[in-house]
Image (cartoon, rainbow, N blue to C red; front, side):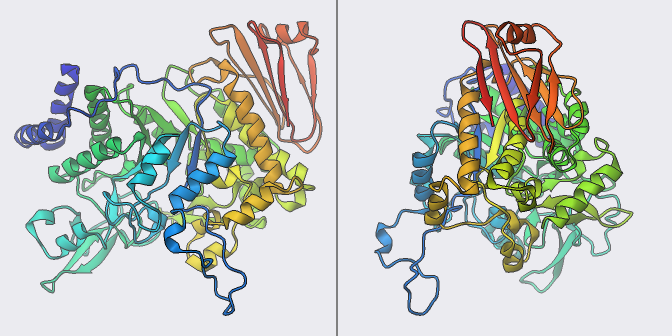
Length: 594
């Protein structure tokens, strides 16, 4: 354990709370630090990410049990087998992965699995319990034997139904200052708003008084007061407990909002960054094999700030990638994607990107601001709305503006109008080829992996737009479709299997391997990864267009190897084709075509 990390922890607490309170908080924190937690480091050199790593994102209960179709009353009731013999939802997920994941994913992000009251898990009632509808800590332990688990640490807010908030409403000393309260006429005009509902929500305390509580995201989600050191210490304890339960990556949900100060925008506050640095310093001090991932759905440059100087997050979400790829697929113009990709930090010289396209949330609009011409992007928005997508809005001084596209990524970029099942699958997989090719850790949403289309009934049933991409289909129906070689699910799944298998066998796909975006025209996105330590390269070509496109290879050294291998200087790509070519080193040329 490095004492310089301990000093950094002390200094950060003084920055957060002042000299006297910071020193007292440091002493309290020292008593919390579990000495037997280290997994073996050292922390400056944790287990490196490699080309063999990819992450699958799933709800613990994303697959539902089949229902008894012979039920006389027509209600959807579970089959009559004894409940005690039924696997838990988490066990059901594990069994599905054992059958369907053939080594493609090393990380598994299980979305919040605690008891909750809303927001599909992100309004947590108890951070220390597993939702009994999902399973128990034993199920988590079983998954931890097969995957490096990613846990959500929801720092900004919690459920108003939690014991903590109920204690607050009783004005009990233990939680009296745990939440942020303001006068009813508090001026919120300077506060950055990611939603359109009121910032303050009135609650009636047991003594009959009304208190106005800061609720950034919904009236059911009260924001914590991190200006109270007790709140921070409690979440550090929870962080340590997550590590004990097998977390190998901790995702800091909505972290950009956690520190509020009157007169500021209350987003990206310096003390927010200090809390991220504090968690990183604890990891470094204890030499934990744990990574921090920050979730900040904001414009690209603001998002990058959470890497700090290499002393904050290990990984940051690549929030600009989903809208840029969606725009390339819909408009058949990869120009904005190419231009942006050329500006990315060189691998090893900045954050490791958590590259994703779809998630349990929607496709953020804000991260694309300034990266795509407004008029062109508006055409893309209009098109995906015609294809059944929805839009969520946020408040600004100018009024509500689009905040996120709510959709199935497959339905947005590859609608039925595109043609056959095979043509739709190729268009969708072309998008994910970019995801897998770019430097970083690729992450795939479960519904993308199994080829799910948008769940149009979801928003009507649940009353919120994000439900369109949060269906929990019956497992037997999913398995049946995956077993039908003519189905869209089967075509998509097979394509993922091919890309994941190719990727994990090519060293140039490691996050730290060099990356160069190549000159291309119109709908083509081309890059080369490598060389790796063995001198190998991978050329990655993706054609987002509906017509054939020719790519000319003019740059050495990778292309000279291809020419010598008989590939020629010009490569003709079919509509929406993905082609990866590995060359160099001691191995023969390898080719993937989808």
